[in-house]
Structures are given as structure tokens and as C-alpha cells.
Amino acid sequence: MLGFNFFFLPPFHTFRIADPQNWVALTAFFITALAVGQLSARAKRRAEEAESSRVEIKRLYEELREAFDRASEAEAVKRSERLKSALLDAVTHDIRTPLTSIKASATLLLEDRDANENIEKLSSEEQHAMLEVINHGADRLDRFVEGIVDLARIEAGDMTLHRNWGAIDDIIEAALAQGRTAYTAT
Image: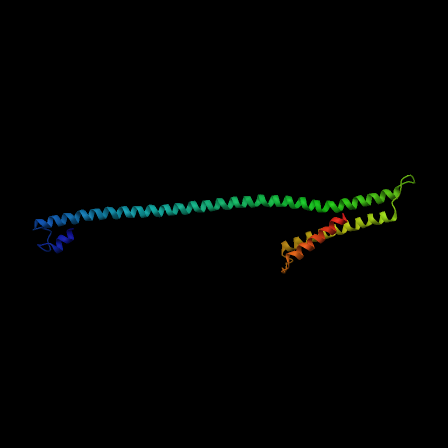
């Protein structure tokens, strides 16, 4: 307002106002300058508030993500424990089944050998069947232990898997045949 008066209103290069209409113009300029200054200050405050809100939201987001990561890790640990328990149950079952067959057959053979004349002894076919059960059970345990060793080697990175495409029917048929063989042997 003072600059406008000094440079553009007669008498030029002074701060005096000769025309009363210039007072109205100067007052309008002064009010406009005050309003613009206030609006500019508000806009600056709002921009600062928005920036601080953005920083706060970013901080809260990071905290939330960290909390989520911790919760995910905790959930992964729980799942891992459940999987370990299920794996242990499966391993225990897969080891006990052939061990039970071996133990039962070996016990029958030992009792048959130690039997006196009053107890009927096993025929040679029955003894052969018991020995086959023992042999098959030992083979199952050997395959199972070999599978566990291979799995440990895969996890350690000592062995790599090579995937091949195959028909799902062939895979299912092979699995069923292997399951039937294992089932009939026990």
C-alpha cells in the first residue's frame, strides 16, 4: 500500500495523498493485503499440519507394519510347531509300523524255536512268511531312513531336485501301487 502511494499516486515520490478517492483505494489495498496475509498464514499452518499429519501417519504405518510382521512371525512359529508335531507323529507311526511287524514276527519265531513238544510248532511256510515280514519291515525302515536322509540333504542344499512334467494319472497310479505294496506287506 505504501509502495503504491509512493510510486503511483500524485504527488509522486511522497507519502502524501492529495485526492480523497485515493484514500478509498489505499484502504482497499490495505484490507486486501491484510486478508491475503491472513489467508497465506492459514495456508502455511495447514500445510505444516498436513505435513506433520503425514509424518505421523507414516510413523503409525511403520509401527503397524512392524506389529504385523511380529504377529506374522509368531503365527509362523506356531504353524512351524504344529507342522513339527504332525511330522513327528507321522515319523513315529512310519517307524513303529514296520518295527511292530518285525518284533511280532521275530517273537513268534523265537517262541516257536523254544516251544516244547506240547505246543504246535510253526510250519516251514509259516516260518518263511514270518521271515518275509521281517525282511519287508526292515526294507521299509531302510527306505524310510533313506528318505529322511535325502530330505535333510535337500534342506542343507547338498542335493537338488530336478522337476519333470508328467501326467497326473501316472503319478497317482504310481502312488497307489506303492501304497498297495506297502499295505499288503504289513
